[in-house]
View 1 (tube, rainbow over the protein chains, first blue to last red):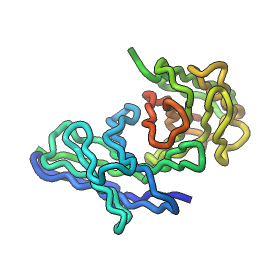
View 2 (cartoon, rainbow over the protein chains, first blue to last red):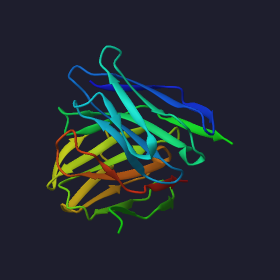
View 3 (cartoon, rainbow over the protein chains, first blue to last red):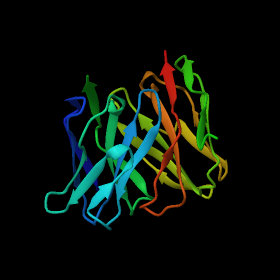
View 4 (cartoon, chains in turn blue, brown):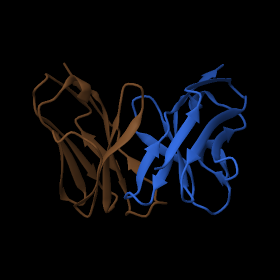
Length: 114
Length: 114
């Protein structure tokens, strides 16, 4: 079975500082990985996805993530945090053997300090 | 135009009642999902349908019954509601069952069982 672990349930950054959210996966097959963002009282919105093309994936709002097979990681970064980045972030893996269901990590809440 | 919509947005009800949550997507997608997000923000798949056919049925109590009258709708009916059913329920859709396809999420329905 596939699984995803997000290290750190809360991350606090200063505005303008680097945002780094960690995601590690476990999969017996090459994974397809996603990062979603959830703003307060809203649904999830796709930030970016890895589908075995380029290992460095660029997404919306200045976010990017790098797939590292040797480390089984797919960490999300943004060079300079903005107040509007305050949200919950979820890493997920798609299970091709189970109808494309997404298995999510526990989420990381990002707080941006002025 | 809203891509994936859910009604109601909030649902407060007593234990033992039966309730339904409706979901509609206007994206022309073939596949729809229900996810449950608990109070700790953990997200878990419940069901998925592809072209009105049940694809995923996770270990969900049989008090939960999804119904897909057509490809654009996937409703969730819950019988004999329990306190533990309190959560946010998200509907999502994707173009088809290809595992690299993005899932589009609705705004969620916050269910509170008293």
